[in-house]
Length: 137
Image (tube, rainbow, N blue to C red; front, side, top):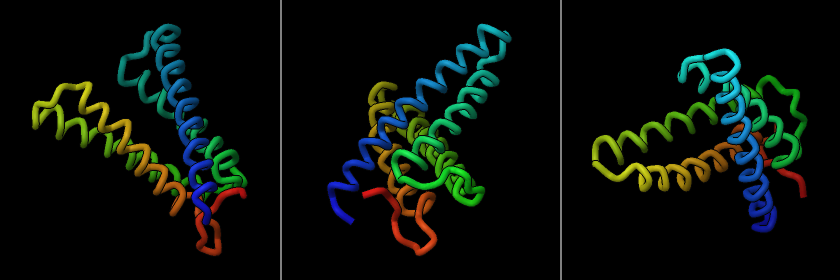
């Protein structure tokens, strides 16, 4: 696998992540405004909408694979939930336990979690049937 391919996939993964984040925010704010949803309910709805954008974008654009795969989606969902858990764990450790300023804890999160998520998506969630890391040339 070429470094050029991995760099391209990393860039597209980041762009899909931005689109998913914007979807999350728009849906969460929309739920609050339209339905007076609680913060937790609105955030959950935003997350659910963003997972769809993230999965479809990464399946098709980042890794060039068919999106209609229950097994692939299940693996992706595990990666997504692990990323959410890592996000919360890093924030708790650095900010709550060690007393770092929130902005520095968040800076670590936005660097570490996407890198781990990309690696897990590439090497496991979107791995092809032959066991090779996937991606368009």
